[in-house]
Length: 193
Image (tube, rainbow, N blue to C red; front, side, top):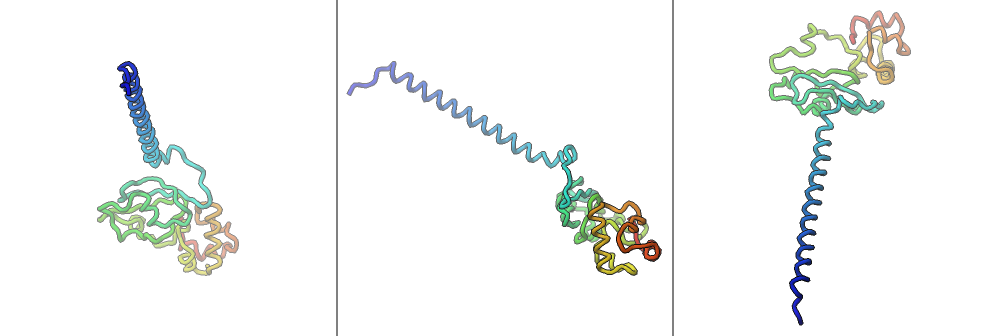
């Protein structure tokens, strides 16, 4: 067999070299695009406030501040509890007063969860030891402890809150079916917003 002449072998080597160079360029471009997509996804959490989507009935916004690793505004499922809000904010900071926050409490839309640092006053202490029930965060069980409020009326209060948003004033309770002036006079000193 005759060996290929030099002028035939040279273009084949050149084609292999060009093919290898093109493969390297394509791989580099693919890596750049993948890096850009991943970087964009990672920073999307930082842009939460820049683009605010419409909140569905199954979601709520909670502002988490204080001794957490990433304070901010978070979109959570409607069934979220304080523990979920704290987890969304990166967890408790090393100096958080872990016993000052009820992590099991359900959160409400528009609520601010403040996690105090060790040595700081808790939200209850800061409000002068206000032991009144907060209408915007109370559970049905907490509302049921109020005079003349049973389980059914407690559920109606929560349903009104879910449908209409936070109570702006204690007087908004009059909008709940089954609560009149006489009942309001009994519970007004025991609740707050």
